[in-house]
Image 1 (cartoon, rainbow, N blue to C red):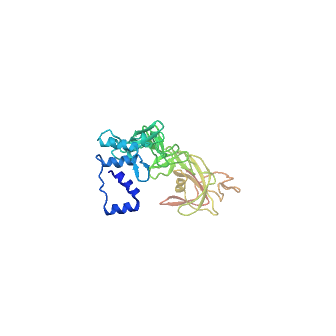
Image 2: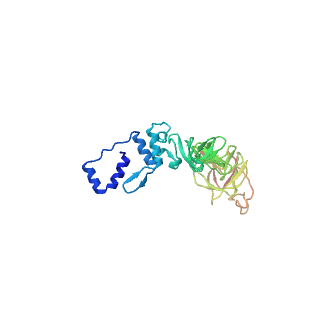
Image 3: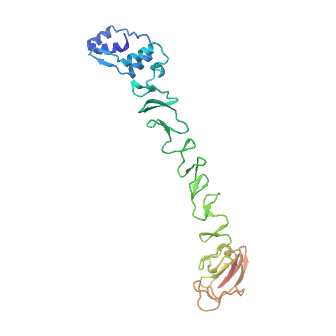
Length: 313
């Protein structure tokens, strides 16, 4: 008596039968064959219920068990290694796939086993093929997933910085036109061959401060103003009432020049010399009489009071 038959018989006997079995239980004697295959065949091919007391196995189940009991290596149970998880497709047309090396493809032409996907590809049962995950791209036979901020280079199949950005310190840095990342700190600086000038990058040696640009002496705080400037020279004047003490060479260097080469008093004119009202917006005569020198200190030459001077490269 098979285990299959005992279970169905007990269902037919009801409570009384169950009590009887509990008192004198049937001895379940498995049919000659492979017990795992018995369970496999009954799980894969559902039994047909006939009547109230007898569960008769379906024809497919019987055929499956018959093949298994003959110990045929090519039997359906043997091909699936008695593992229902390996079954691919409807039971009647099923094939067995090895999950370690293939996956199931239930296509319109019938179920089949497709070789395991490699190189980052994922199984696509709908097409019975291997595809890249949505976050990756096909390149050179592999699936490449680039991190945020990088794009795939089709030539090398590597992840690179997108156009208009540059690699720096493991990140992609976007610098405005004319600037490049500084390798030391990845900040944007003027490109080689150019220099910072008033917030812009100009060809090296071509920086000139804007007219009417003001500043203060780093040591004394005295206010000065640029009267005019070009890439070679600049005319600088005192700007506060009564003038002050000015480290002319130091101020010239702050403006992008190397030193001062001429200076003089102005008779109290800002951007002028001993004349009517003048200013950086309406400059007068540029004149240097070498008056107004007040010695020097560790920061260089000192000019005092209402003076102006010329900066040179």
